[in-house]
Image (cartoon, rainbow, N blue to C red):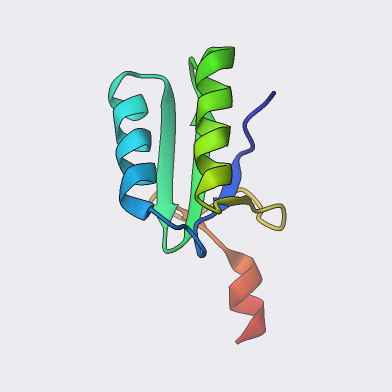
Length: 89
């Protein structure tokens, strides 16, 4: 399986467990991620198949869903921004 780039943590059951797992994987150099509100951007750097499956199972059991409506845009501070919400207001 493959890990997606964008996830929505709006309905996450155990946010602490998910974030602790992400922090641990980032510290090990396996992933890079950013969290902006409830939107998670994740990049697989060196996850093996077992780690990918474990992470996807964690997301599934905690209602962290793939977010397919996001684009990869960056602002001048090298932080990603979501222009989808800007257009609504």
